[in-house]
Image (cartoon, rainbow, N blue to C red; front, side, top):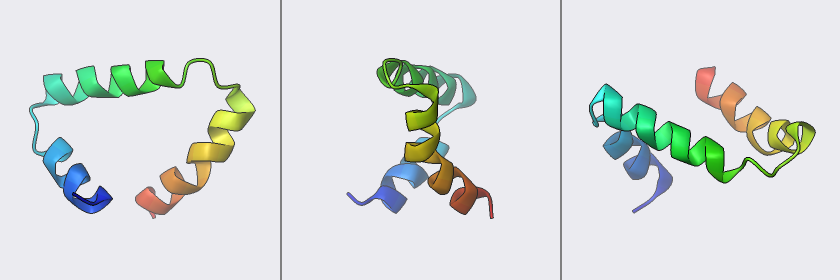
Amino acid sequence: MNLAQLEAEIFSLPHQERAALARRLLLSVEEVSESEFEQLLGGRIGASLG
């Protein structure tokens, strides 16, 4: 399964399940510094929104 397929699966989940997954994912990077987090995800978030 590639990233696009995984995203499609995730977005098909009910809101509550997506929120629970998002929380778990965010907690999994809890130990990463804020600047490192922005470096890791900043480009991806911008690319996803634009």
